[in-house]
Image (tube, rainbow, N blue to C red):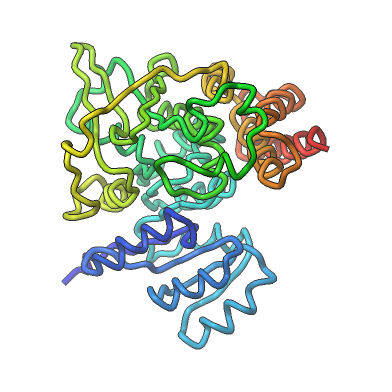
Amino acid sequence: MKDTVKNIAVLGATGSIGSQTLDIIASHPERYRAVVLTAGSRADKLIEAAIAHRPRRVVIGRTELLPRVEAALAPLGIECRAGDEALAECVEADDIDTVLTATVGYSGLQPTVRAIRAGKDIALANKETLVVAGEMINRMLAESPSKIYPVDSEHSAIAQCLAGEDPACVKRLLITASGGPFRTWPADRMAEATAADALKHPNWNMGRKITIDSATMMNKAFEIIEAHYLFGVESGRIEAVVHPQSIVHSMVEFVDGAVKAQLGLPDMHLPIAYALGCHARLDGAAGHMSLADFATLTFEKPDVKRFPCLGLAHTALERRGNTACVINAANEIAVAAFLEGRIKFGQIYGVIERTLEAVPYIAEPVFDDYVASNAEARVKAAEMIK
């Protein structure tokens, strides 16, 4: 009898998305098996997860942490490796069916590229992969049996709304945003906000970097770019709408005026399960939602003057080339500097804007161009911060 259990590689297994993915795998051993776990620097959490789930292989990003991981896991028969190349290689193994990429930022690009070349399906939680190199990724997918299943709650919602629909009948994609912790703050107060202020997201429990992106609304800019490449809708027909309750995860408007929305609790277990199942429903993936508990759902236009990072989505999609790659790299450097107290919240956008002006534009980048643009943008952004 053929083994019907799907083998999963969880990249970023110690983060929020990775941990929730392991919850789902543990709850459904008849469906899923974690065969690869990776982490960047959280060696102890990786060891803990590996002992619980007994994967065949683990990869730790920081090579100096490998001896600690090996000492704990090698006696259990778990193969232990370290470094960026090991992370990229691990997704190519014959025993992997699906690669869930939940690493942070640009680091998700290389393993996703390798997974597509190896013909693996991708459960994509790393939005930066499509932000940085969406055109290249789509060209690769056209020549590969691989498919991408979005994990972001917004893109999962859009995929659910589009199920069974004619793409030609789509008028607009409406991507909802909570507004983050500064939705009602005036611009002058936001400019002086501390990292502690920005990390107080009202609805979602996420990693530090994406929480800051939520506060600047850069995450919504990235989601617009990602939606363009996932669903083939031009940027002029993709809009963000602020929805403070985070119950409507996104909407699709059709040419006849109908609008479909996907609702659910702010819980990532549901979109993760939907992606792992290749858009099949998993019983009990998330908690029951009573509409009576959410009698008031409100929507408002985002304020691009207070949140200028949101406008970078259309800048990137209009210019194309390496534009989004540069924006992403500068944003990662600026967010890290803000979290370390080296720049103010109000300076994040300026660092990105000036970096975009400083890095040469490449109209039709190939993979090596993305690598070079990412590296140069990081150097330029760091210089500006100094």
